[in-house]
Image (cartoon, rainbow, N blue to C red; front, side):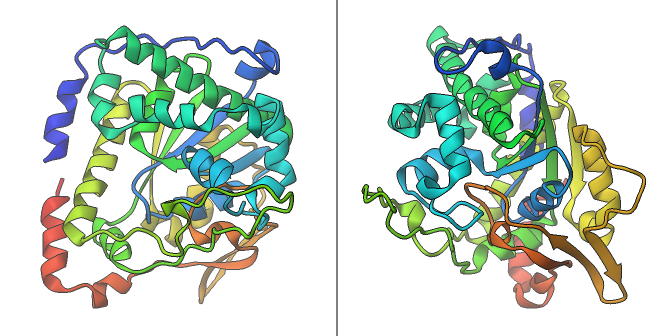
Length: 349
C-alpha cells in the first residue's frame, strides 16, 4: 500500500525558506498579515461545497483551484465563479494588476514550466526530504514567489485575511509548506473511496467554457476547455485517491497544521464541521447559529450568497440561493459489485 512507502521520505526535513519578492507592491504587504487555508484531497470529495460554505463566513475569500488559474483562467479565459469570463471579471483583473501590473506582464508559459519542474507527484519524495539539487530549489523558490504574489493580491483586492485555495493537489501543498513567508493551514477533505471512484466513472459536464472576450482579444482554447470532465476507471481512481490522501497524511507529519474533515460528517452535521474548520482557519464565528445553514426532517440546506470569484472547481461554485447539503450514495446501488470490491481492496488502510 502507498502508506507503507511514504514515511521513508521523511528522513530529514528541509528548512522552510523565505521567498523574496520583487516587482509591484512592497514586501510587507506581499508576505504578511494573512493566512491560506488549503483544501487538500482527491477530486469529487466535497471540497467545492466546503469552500463555498467557508466563503459565507466574514473575512474569508474562496478562490477555487488556484493551481489551474494560468491554464484555465489566464490562457483559456474560462468563467469565474461569478459567471463572467476570467478576463472580464473585475475581481481577477484587480488581482492581476496588484500582483503583476496586469496579467499581460505575467509569463504564463514560464509559470507552467516551473510547475512541471517542481509541482508533480513524482517530486513529493524530494519535497519531503532535505536533499535536493540547487536547480530544483531555485525553481521552487521562483514558483512560490508567484503564489505569494497571488495570495497577497487576493487579500488586498478582497479585504479578507483568510484565503481558501481548493487546489487539492498534495504536490502543491508540499511546495507551499516550504514557504516560510506563508501562514499555511491544510484542510484535508476525505470521502468514501467507492463514492469517489463511482463519481469519476460518470460523465460530468463542465460549465466553465467562456464566450469570446469582450475586448476582442483571442482566447487560447485547450483540452481543459472541453465540455466534460475527465473520467477515470475504478482502479485508476482508487490509486489516485490513495496517493493524494496518503501524501497529505505524510505532509501532516512534517508539522504542517492539518485538520482532517470527512465528507460524510459534513453532510450529516454541516454546522459542527464548519465551525471546527473555521476555528482551525482562524475565522471569527460567533456562538449564534450560522444563519445561512438550515435543516429539518428533509435534510440540511445552505443559503448561499452571490457566487464567489473562483477560477476552477466543481459546478457548485456557480450556484447561489438555497443549495441542498445531502449525502450522495448513488454508488451503493449503481456501482457493480466487482468494481466496489476492487476499489475497496486498493484503498484499505
